[in-house]
Length: 396
Ligand code: SF4
Image 1 (tube, rainbow, N blue to C red):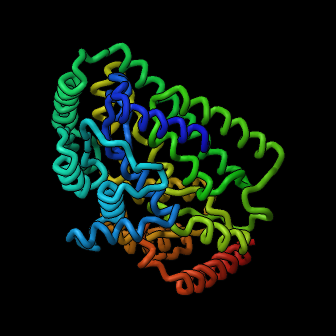
Image 2: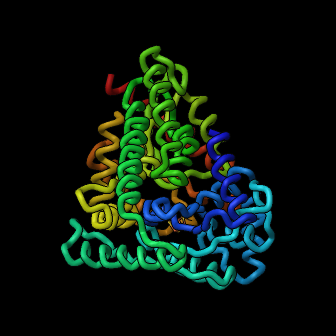
């Protein structure tokens, strides 16, 4: 996968220098397929901020943003991104390539609307902002038409900024490739329904990069086909991600990128495997369906996990717990991501009461490690594991 991601960033850095392709920065829930159809290279600042976290550079970058006057209460992905844009510090040599334009969708949060306005001023480039109404229950006809109209405006925006006509045939092809990629990703995650699971969600957090950054490309699908074959083989050979898997858990929220190894080892040391999570499964939701890819993409964007109501979220969590036979529920209360973390205490109570599943809430942040307490987390996880173990024993 390293090769795949290196090739992606190398192409983008080359395009920045020689202008061979346009570059767009886009939010993770944004409409990437039309960009591929116009041969634009999409760059995901959120993914880059996660890389800052995993490479332990995020605190330094967040502090740069804070010195500029941005509150520490704002999302650490935003702070890390601004810090990196200003200082040019990044795990990617020379940092992210400069965008020619920006595309943001508010189907994940309101933060990105302000974040991208700031980027637009900073780089002095145009911004397209897609507004996706929040979904209470089902997508309404009005909402679907409203987003579809904006999708057509996006096409005009791309034509102006790329200086060429939009290729609808190519868009259809990209949409089909993206759909295939999402089904492959779904199948990959589903291999963990097996007992023992052939990978844990910590592996899935790593393998998610192509479906985020390369969705709609053949390279993405090729990589996932190989990964799926490998995981199926592991299932057949009974190879477990956590040897002697005793406990199966579900993770909620964005990973704590700064602590992936520590947490993975902590849980594994107790024979506990995090077999699924709401974050990587959320990526399998936004499938473009129907004959008209413009309308289909608009509807798919509505379905982002953070754009649905709380009752639907609980339904999804319950579904994952049952499907992956989870014995417990691990909730990351993520200081950065308010839309993801709001209501988690109610969710924990509901899951505990209705499914009789022990839950734990870990207070942390996706990349701002200053709010992570190692000792407290370790003690709480150990107490939680004891509770889950007792419950499993009683059920035998
Ligand atoms: S607030 Fe949450 S959804 Fe929004 S950019 Fe930050 S992490 Fe992503």
